Image 1: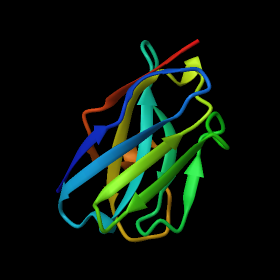
Image 2 (image 1 turned 90 degrees about the horizontal axis):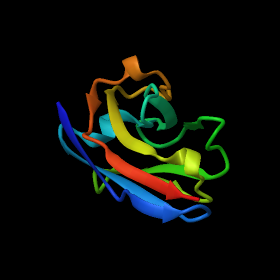
Image 3 (image 1 turned 90 degrees about the vertical axis):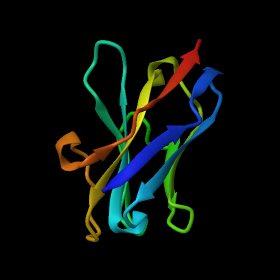
Image 4 (image 1 turned 180 degrees about the vertical axis):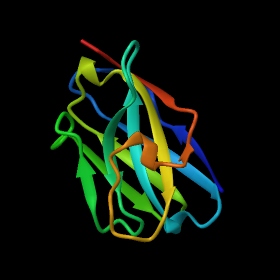
Length: 126
C-alpha cells in the first residue's frame, strides 16, 4: 500500500505557473505507475497526465498538452506536475494517483488506479 499527499496548489493569475508535488510513502514508489487527475465543481474527475513506473513514458490530456509536464523522482518518492500558462478553466482540485505495476504503460482511466491522495486546490483567476 502507498500513501499519497499532494501539495503546491494555490491561487494564481491566468498565464502564471504552479508546480504540484505528490509525496508518496509506504511501499516502493518506483514500482507504481502514477497519474494526475483533476475535478472541477460539478464535473467528473478527469485525467490530466500520467507517467510510467520509471518515467520512460508520459501521456497528457489534450487540454494540457504543451503547458503541463509530469515527472517523478523515485529517489525522493515524489511525483510532480509543472503547470505553465495556466487558464481559468484549469481551476480544480488536483489529485495524484498510483497503480502498482512495472510495465511501461501509462494509465488514463480513473478505475485503473488503486490509491489516491486527498487533493490540492488550484484556482486560476482571469
